[in-house]
Image 1: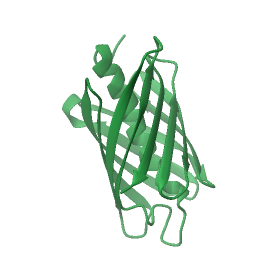
Image 2: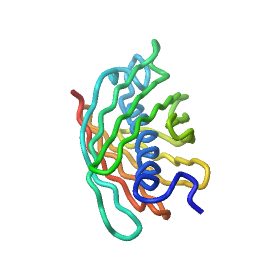
Image 3: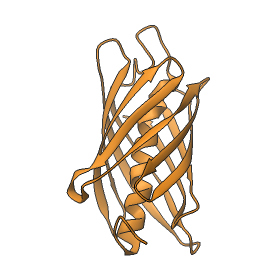
Image 4: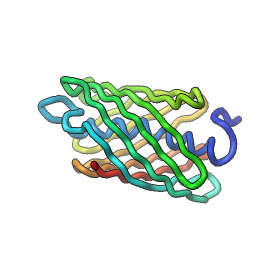
Length: 167
């Protein structure tokens, strides 16, 4: 049963939603005195690939804007991604309580939403992301100005790999 639509655009949206949720959590690896999201405000951009269950891949380009609340414990993100055949706009909010991360994401035009939870530490983030009818494991590594996001799922979207740099 396809809950998010059919064809490549539905599959791509699932991957994008997961990518959005994961990209938000990357800032937790930047634990500083101002909170885990300190120093993460601003614009990021990059590209990567989406791998489908049939083995095909498609290139994706993304731009993200991060807004960190005073105290550095809350983060809002908007993510805009596109390929040759689709585009989407996602919004996300993440909160950190120590090493625990939790949050939610939505894609307004499709009225789809989901949540995320996991841990962060030492520049590595492991997160479980879900939405109605879909779940994935996400791993993120960050070195300050570069983010690498890997998403693995057993659904129509088998993998997503995105690398972004701070603008």
